[in-house]
Length: 426
Image (tube, rainbow, N blue to C red):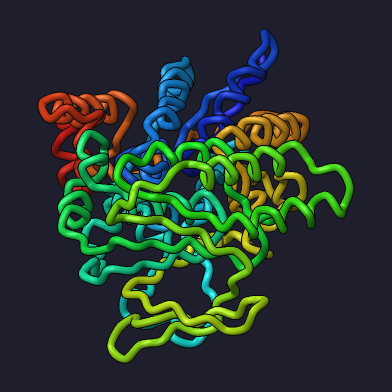
C-alpha cells in the first residue's frame, strides 16, 4: 500500500484545509503522513492573528483545525522557520510533495507622496499588533490625535476602522492583546473615516460585517444615502444586480436607517475618494483625495492603508503578480504545490480556502509517483531545537485559555516567542 509523506509549510487555514483534504483522500490503497511546519510557536495563522477580537464566532473554526491535528499521521512542527532552520531543498528531497500555505503578510503600498510619514501605517502592522502577533508586540502607534483615516474598502479596512472607533470597553472581554487594549483605552481617536476609491457598488465588504455595525453601542456609523442610491443605479444599469452586491447594498441602507445617537465616537464611510497625497511635517496631518467633485483635504492624525497584501520572499520560490508562480496550484517543474493566498493572492474568506485546498490536493495526488524513502524533517533539525509539537501547543493553548477565564476573556495571549515557549513547558 503506497504511503506518502507530505510537508505543509504554514499553519493557517489554507494549511489545515490542505491537511484535511489529504486526510479525506485516504483509502485502503493510499495513506499519508502530514508534517505541518510553522515559523511561530502558535498555529492557526490569521484565525489567531488576523480575525478581529470582537468577532469570536469566526475563530471557532479553530476547533476544526484541532480535529485535523488530532488525526493519525499528522504532526505539528511549530517554532521552525523555513530558510533558517530548514531549507526548501531539504523538504523537496525528503517529502513526496511540499505544500506552500505561507499566505501574504506585507501590506501593499499606495505609492503617493507622504506615505512614509510617521503615523502612516499599514493594516499589515496594525492588525497583528492588536492581535498579539509576536513580530508586532513592540510596534508603536500614536493614538493621541482625534481623527483617523483608513484607506480601503474590504473587511480588513472595516476591522481597522471599527477597532479605532469602538469604545474600548466593548473589547475588554475579547482576546485583544493587552498592550493594544491599554493603548486603545488611552486613545483620543473619536472620528474614523473608511475611504474607498470607487463607488459603493465596488466595495469588497461582506454583508455580515456591515450588518454588525449598528450593534456598536457607543459609536454612530454614517454612510451617505446618495452614494448608495448611485451605487444601485450604476449596478442596475449593467443588468440584474447580483445577489452578493444586492445584499451588501441592503446592509449599507440598513446602517443609514439606524437613528444616530449623537455619540462622541463616529465611523464614516466615504466612497469615490482616491488618495493623492498625505500631508504633514514631522507626522501625518492631513490627506488629500481626488473625488468626482474635485480635490478634498481631510485633516487627520493617523492613516492606515488596507488595500491588500503581497507575500514575503521565500528563497527558492518564484513569485509573480503577488503570489507564488503556479498553474492551478502546481509549481511547474517541482514537487511543490501552493494553496490559499500564496496560490491565488489575498482574496476570499476563511472558507474559500477549503474548496481551494481540496482542488489542489486532487492535483497533487494525481501527480504522485513512487513514494520516497528519504526520512523526514526530524532528521534535519538540530537536536536542541525547541519544536512546538501538537501536545506542546495544547499546553500553550490551555494556559492562555486558563489565564483568560480568570479575567472573563476567551484567552490572554502571550505575545513573545519566549513567553509562548515558557507556557508550553511540561
